[in-house]
Amino acid sequence: MSTQHGGDYAAQPTSAPPVSAPPTSAPPAPGSPVAGSAEPTTNGATADEHVSRETPNRVEDDPPLAMEALRAVQILNPSGEITMPRPDHPRVLCVANQKGGVGKTTTTVNLAVALALHGNRVLVVDLDPQGNASTGLNVPHHAGVPDVYDCLIDNVPLAEVAQPVEGIPNLFCVPATIDLAGAEIELVSVVARESRLARAITAHPEKFDYVFIDCPPSLGLLTVNALCAAQEVLIPIQCEYYALEGLNQLINNINLVRQHLNPTLDVSTILLTMYDRRTRLADAVEQDVRNHFGAKVLEAVIPRNVRVSEAPSYGQSVMTYDPGSRGATSYFEAALEIAMRGVNTGGTA
Image 1 (cartoon, helix red, strand yellow):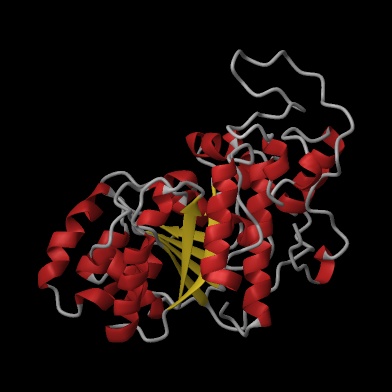
Image 2 (image 1 turned 60 degrees about the vertical axis):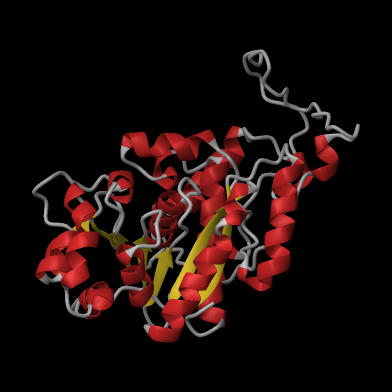
């Protein structure tokens, strides 16, 4: 994978070298793929012949301990000396896809943590009534906690609702509680209902380098509010066939918002998630997406990784839960690529 790096990152490796021998481990479970073996496909070819550049030289899922430790130090950045480039003006990104389960919340949380750990001031706005982004950042969001609903319905300033994320400097989160589930109906009769979130973000006294808005899996008023508040749209796309079916409708809605409500809105970033290197389908979906969206697609690809799924159950991002894992490394590379694109193009990708 060739991701453009700048500054102090130029000399630091972002992927492990080929492993000459698999690490000692317990025998694999029945039916599970054996490390180092090739999975047969229907036409007689092996899966290894179709492995994408997401896994160069067939690096093992479990890297050597030394390389894992190096990755962890690079990602956690305990000294705080290494920083990702900061944009010259705030970038507001709406993470949207009306299909559920494609990694919107996981992407929002991990990109935000990666950027905050490397010198950027980041705000996460949880606009999903499920409150999963709040859970992933370990921010209280039970009933009665001031949340984004109060900002949208009662005009409570965003600064009074945003909470600092424990253990992550420069990262703040506006939580979502179950109250947000009724906001779609209550917003119908509100004046300028589409721009309530945009006004709340603009009125915030502190200026952030990045604002990530985690959208619900729908195209209702909450998502429209996010699209009106954002300058850029980041679309996570799962490497499965169904993930492509509703994409045209999402793009059409984004175009409608651009024409009538927010002329500066742009689909700036496409991120491929849940990439399974063992399947030819994942490679075919990747090629289709890259052919259609071109340079908007990040070079970094997020693989299927059990650490990414485990982290929220501990109230953490994968960046802090297991910083040496393949999932953490991939999200770190995606965050760095987004930061570099913002600098190279004056703040927008």
